[in-house]
Length: 462
Image 1 (cartoon, rainbow, N blue to C red):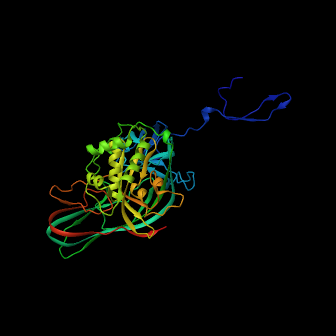
Image 2: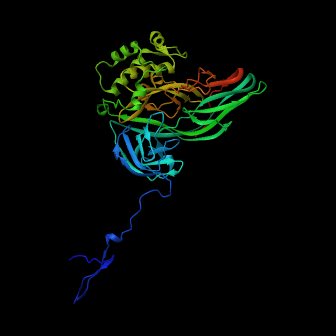
């Protein structure tokens, strides 16, 4: 039979001369309520589609919708993040369980009011994706993260409370002067999360500029001392990566900004040097797998160098004297990998030792297509005397692709500081646990001053 045009939703019965049957619920599709798509409030961002709906770490996504903003500003795209402690995502409604695409990984390709092009960030997992803007948060859309040759786990969370400070004294000046101070930030990432600033003195000029905190002291007086300090609490996770070498992708997306940026030589990582290129080719031989090539470089650096407390000036000196500190180990490792076409960057920060002292330290990361960044500490892999490891972990094996929760990141790659004033006098402080090109800039009538950068203090570990 045909359904009558005037039929409405309700119970349907069959009636005969012998009586009426039991009822069955019938629903008229034209009467089903339809949820209206669009932002919950006027002006709020709204995602209509994500294309593709699945992809690997580093895949380019096109997010279409409305009210994204004419430019990105402080807005961000959040992806799901999972803590391995539980093995399941228990917090899709809370920010704690999401990770934003990052500037230092060059994830954002373009941003308009109706379209965003962004790459899947390192550490992302399958789950909801949404936007955060100054107009509010968008709806969530599911995205499936596929795995290509390996998995990355975040486990064994430790919470740190730290403080670092700079004291300015012995100022020789006249009125109309100023001093800019760039302090490193605790770098947010998939393994360094929930960063909370407990106190800052004074109020910074910019809380995030070139991945640093910028303070400005105006009209310094000769008879006064000045202190800049910050107290931060955050969570640090250990990283454990399981790689199937045979499934690692051989070819990189050479058109991506990340690939171009982290394979190019720079003043810190001189991978364009002829000696480095020849040496890299000799180490890798006929190997084509980037994971295996990087492991060959790692083993070479550990075998070639001996640990030293003194930092040597350049790679030629490091190779000739066959020794170096953690900075020299990291820079040589990165230079050789870049010469082989493997994205690599040095990491500057501290290691918290067994006595909760902060030790200036450098290590590295390499990028594998579809997997993300792998931590590598060739210095501690050569001879680990700082980090307590369980007996089943051999340092030489462990520190290639894994990292404990005692490494704290302050800088990822070279942090290039731009001049604030055309006539400013910039200063870079040596011996710092960061990779900034500049730490201070004096302007106006400052003739001299003394700056004491104190070591990072570990106030608590929880």
